[in-house]
Length: 258
Ligand code: PEP
Picture: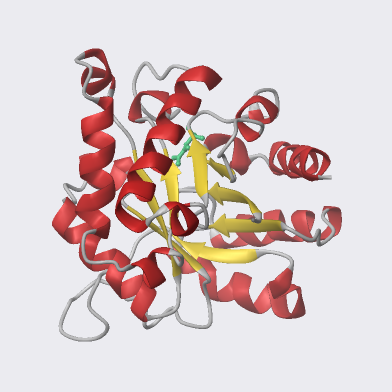
């Protein structure tokens, strides 16, 4: 299975800044077998970055941070994954900021996962409990609910086209009072997610679904998360905005893989 290093730039960087960042990245990274490097810039930067990548598209993949589930139509202000075909390979679905700031529900996310798969774009489905849910011992229930809320209509063939990202909301740097998750706690949740997938889709298929970790990852703690059994990569917010940090994490992932 590949290792995925995904940078989520959120609502940061202008188109010009995004382009300068990409230039730095292109200079510093070499394609490495088994390592998939993905960046999710603002939607307005996708097209220029796609052109800038040109033949280097195999070196760095583009990801959209959000989209609407319909393919075309009278949906003012929205962008569909159909319109993004050929431009992005990945789409983030269900990021906690989408769930809690924009009120996206499991029903919305189920439609988004289906739309991404229908358009041959890999959804990166984010799931994770809030601090309160964790304190009340509800982590397992929340993970199960968010996982199957979004995947309930996805069959065994299609689930292999999905990436799951475990992102405890309380560990995301943008969350007020964010904390660093202990690798043992992350391991427990990753295990839980994998077991849920096994129960529904069977062992063989469940093992083909990449599961990433995300939440305050930086060059100092990335190694500890990447070496958790069952973790197939990282989804990185804040630290991915600093190209040197992102490259350091990529280099670390290369060393761990080899
Ligand atoms: C994220 O927003 O997906 C994320 C993991 O952010 P951060 O790395 O900043 O905690």
